[in-house]
Length: 594
Ligand SMILES: *[C@@H]1O[C@H](CO)[C@@H](O)[C@H](O)[C@H]1NC(C)=O
Ligand SMILES: *[C@@H]1O[C@H](CO)[C@@H](O)[C@H](O)[C@H]1NC(C)=O
Ligand SMILES: *[C@@H]1O[C@H](CO)[C@@H](O)[C@H](O)[C@H]1NC(C)=O
Ligand SMILES: *[C@@H]1O[C@H](CO)[C@@H](O)[C@H](O)[C@H]1NC(C)=O
Ligand SMILES: *[C@@H]1O[C@H](CO)[C@@H](O)[C@H](O)[C@H]1NC(C)=O
Ligand SMILES: *[C@@H]1O[C@H](CO)[C@@H](O)[C@H](O)[C@H]1NC(C)=O
Image (tube, rainbow, N blue to C red; front, top):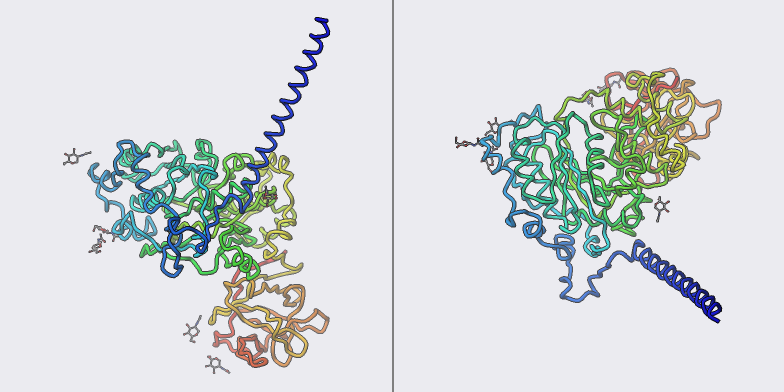
């Protein structure tokens, strides 16, 4: 009996254990599911529609009048820091006051040659200024559930930054970020030698318990400084900011939000401009901009393509894809960033790391995004406050090409002819091999097909490849498919900046002038695009003249009315050496195929 009861007991115990495990698993599954659901794009947002919210929630928004989003967010977040973050529970002391206490003149170092900005001007503008809110009006109707957002370590590498630009950045971060979202602000001093960045900076930083100053033992440069910060950072997300940036209202929540939705997204705020001379804060361009790069791996800003613009208009608060980001401000999940290889620390001093990271993340399964509701301004300087050899930038770009371009890297060398030497056998480009293996990264052809079809591959036999820009009008060769002469589209001109309106033209060794697989032909004295045939005449480019048929006739921009539409088209005229309206330059890098 006893034995049986024991046996029965044992069975019961097992049953109870199984039931417990089952219900625990179910509960966990349910929790995980619920949690997962909360993090879908829409659900983690508290959508506030102006017409349905109660008046106590926020005032009715007149978009033309309000400072976007202001009514939804803390009016003066600096106060939050005053209560919680500052050790002696008072407002922080100004950096400039501390510097003066050390008997250092605020105007000690102001040389324009050294800083490439108007230092006296920035010193003379409030470090606590209000700037225009540059976000789209729609951002006001998005309220982020702060409790669901990950916290940030803000990493700011500093090298010889004037005191006022640095203090203005820190003040803007304190003013525009909820205290609960900032785990720490980390200043990485990369061997600055300006006096105010010595003991006065220590004293300034000491005031905040969430601010840390690290000083590097050797000159690290941008990439290593950021990776140094990455190693020390503790929060779930790292936000990198250049020391000469300034953040705007509500800048932090949208980028943290995008990362909470997808940990493999690296998110850049929309970049505004601070004028290096007047320090005026302004939007860069009305159309949201994204990041492109050319075959030389050089980054440039471009406006959104109309197709993507339509997407953004339909969903104006959601981050959109970009082939590349620029390094001056971006946010990334810390663990993902480390797993995916961080930044290429074999790169030198400055530049190119952002394009390398962008290509890598796309190829290895992540994505690069720009958030329209997060705005950070960057001081666009004419030069660097440090010694920088152009060859270092070429070296960095060459690393990108060698690491990721595969069969396409010959184009990097074609477009960098005269700058970039092919690598030595001793050069190593294996730093990302473990990442390539772990993430089963795709090849560059995939990137061209799926992410960046705008980066065109020059046709075989190209001697020159790029935009053809008129020296006087500054406009580029484009193609208006609707303007047709006889049966072929006319070549028209458009602003070169609108990359989707202008085209890359290839001048081949055999004299063909090609665009998108077709040939440029002359019809009734005008340039049209037609299928290539043997009867196509030959072109050449000499002394900026685009010449046809052995050089008696030249291409010139002329007005023409087609079906009641006034267009600028390209006509053929007798060549005139002194007339510069018929001069054309390859606006993008000249391609010299071999
Ligand atoms: C600054 O100068 C004042 C007056 O000359 C002096 O009393 C003070 O000790 C100096 N402070 C420092 C930090 O050198
Ligand atoms: C900036 O102002 C200081 C003090 O007024 C002056 O000594 C210095 O020459 C000025 N620097 C420049 C670049 O104008
Ligand atoms: C600062 O600005 C004021 C006017 O706003 C001007 O009088 C003064 O000369 C400026 N100082 C410097 C050093 O530029
Ligand atoms: C995150 O983004 C990547 C790249 O766009 C995508 O493949 C992946 O499915 C996304 N993950 C989630 C959870 O949405
Ligand atoms: C073109 O020539 C005119 C006069 O011949 C001159 O004033 C102008 O600066 C030139 N433009 C360019 C872009 O060379
Ligand atoms: C060549 O161009 C110049 C400057 O536009 C003009 O003055 C001259 O008349 C032109 N010559 C001919 C032969 O058209």
